[in-house]
Image (tube, rainbow, N blue to C red; front, side, top):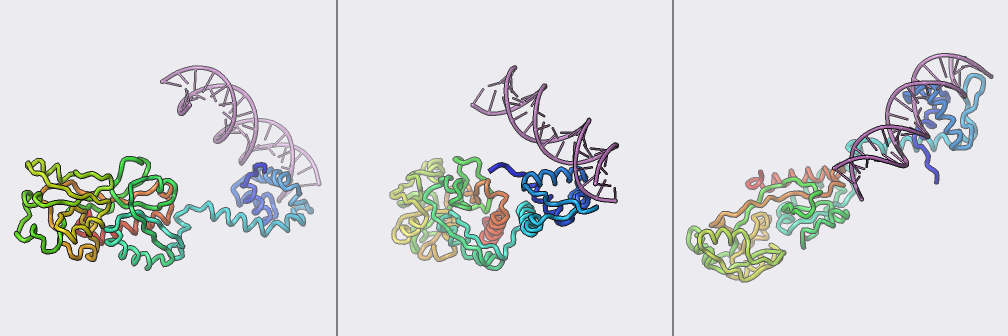
Length: 306
DNA sequence: TATCCGAACCCTGGAGATCG
DNA sequence: CGATCTCCAGGGTTCGGATA
């Protein structure tokens, strides 16, 4: 197919509406001569005279009359497509499924409030939360994921991010665990119990071990699990001490049968961010989702939010 | 290999003249 | 009076050479 100048569509629509080169030119902000040559190009493109002289005016050919309504609709749709995107979004009628990769604790903590907020303004929007087996950026690049919630990695610098809230590590143990029988969890007593840690990379050591080492202490990690939900379940039914982000304790149900406590050693804060591909940055629906998520996180994490 | 720069070419549109 | 033509200027695109 040879290339067609789609500007001709708008000009043809105006010419068929006005039935005058001068008037059509005026309405499109062109000179009559320019519009005249546009009409000449239209005649070449269509192989029809389109408008012919009848005395001092132009009248449409039968072919032009046949085209008029279709051209008008096409021009109207073309103008709608080229409107700024922000003007086109109607949240109330938005029918879309957003796929979000997040850990279980975040889903427990934010999921109910998020979907409740969305239901009020965008009743046709659906959320699909998927697990975080890793931090691979490829699903974001390929459009398999709309959004990821987690700590920013360094393997995909092109990704856009926005801080949702600041989390921190806490210790967990089963209800009635001897560690909490006495007031105050000292570093010595904390290190004296066996531990379970969460690590997708199967690491037995982390920031807590560094902090303990600075005090000449060392804890014994007897188990590594891939996710926080695994750690919560293990700790709930054993004497192991766990280490999880506070947000992973969710809305209360996840922490049933568990007690959490402040760590006796300092650990770096956990910056939880929304992460998305630049392709979606200007998408008004995606922008709305990000703003909504941020607002819900601000309400759900009043003590940890910055 | 990528980027920059300049020359040549092409397209568009304005001004003015001409025609019906 | 309005449509169309020619001429011309301005801007964009393409292409080839130079450079890092």
